[in-house]
Length: 454
Image (cartoon, rainbow, N blue to C red):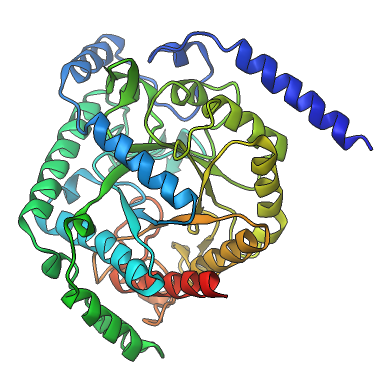
């Protein structure tokens, strides 16, 4: 009998918080505690760099972000399915035509698979053209031969080589220009390439799957199907962690402010504090936004977060990206779904099936993930949403279009711990390779179809 009273207290707190919310500006986050941000030793140089970034042209248009918001609203209602994926952290060295083409083709192909098999339109979002920064559990690490040095936080902060670990604000400019080059190539590629080429799925790596014949048939049907321009449409996204950079790339359009470095930006599970700088920045931008939600998120905290970020109850505005780990969904997701229902605020649910499934290979200490755990978490999330009368709007995976990468275990390719050593490229978290990603897309699509028809 105490629960209603607690709920009333929570509602009163939320109401008073929203009434007392101060005026917002792109710089108002500076008055709040900020986690996971690089601090610049040379303040004058950092100021010069950020001033330059504030004058450079936007990377995307506000109208594109608004279109994505409309598509996300459709996904939230179950009319569309989100396929989001890409590198854990992009590297400047990978800003090459062949790599960018294979990465985009993979995301488009995964979207086409879901669209064809599950018979539901998709929206395709890439972790690309700006995903150059990563949160780290500690600001420093001990490296043999170098002692204690700064942790690698992504190419737009410092270099992976131990000699390049000093946090360097000029790398923010390099990040901008690599993002601009990436976007220029991807936009021109989709403008000049037909769907028959970009959607030509290579199933050779799936030959050991029991479903190989069926997947081959579907791949051929996708390749030969008459596809419209929308099949080539993609959107960009990254974790907005370095807020001085994000502020510099924020622009006023009409009477709204947009972060025009990407169509969608998200808050990580480590930076979503209710009274923190990241929530303060995110509450004021008009982009669609994501929030990572892991096991540490309390139900009342989730309600409070939604009230701050989407007080006007705008559809497609906020995506809740759950990241629990296979086997933990049942104990965590129902409470979060109930909290969202009680808030009355519309959200788009997305399943990040990678970040809760990290393991360390026993034989060689490589950071890795099991393909089977990733697919299992998606299946568990789908089942809970269906049972709770909620809608899973999409998936969020770390993937690469490179066929020879060996970073995740299993899949029908049967990658072993020993094989991880063959071509382990990532500087941060392990990614599904091309064949593993395509296999996962087929598995998710089949389950999405079953869930709709059951």
